[in-house]
Length: 176
Image (cartoon, rainbow, N blue to C red):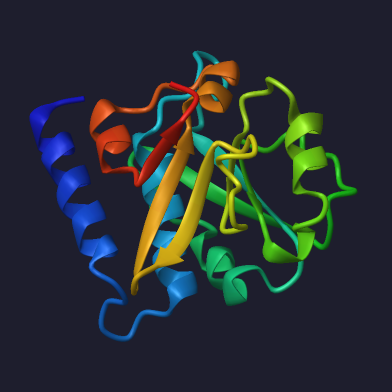
């Protein structure tokens, strides 16, 4: 990652961590995090097709007040997001590059993560202890700001590469 991208990432996360930006809801800020994780995380070779489309699967009801749905068609670097909504985890998630698991799936998130196994699907959620219990990235609202936690062992199992600057900005990194 070049120096400009590193600086941009650090500044962006610092801005997002300052709390609620003027006029942005918690869901919108968390959606911005998801967009930027998609931009900076490196997938295993061949996972993202030549068209650069990344499928973001949103699992659950009323996830982040619908803010993730607004990411459909947005660019994350050279990748374009395609958002698919699933009411619950019974759907086949094998075609997903990113899986955001909503609060309504709190009691099933461990089975969702387990079912995805070592597939190259980046799992993200704002369920408490998500990263600690096996998800890749957990987004949390603490002390009037949004923070994130990373489960490095889960990410490595799915063959993701996280920039070291991103790991340095995480509130907690599990599985080092």
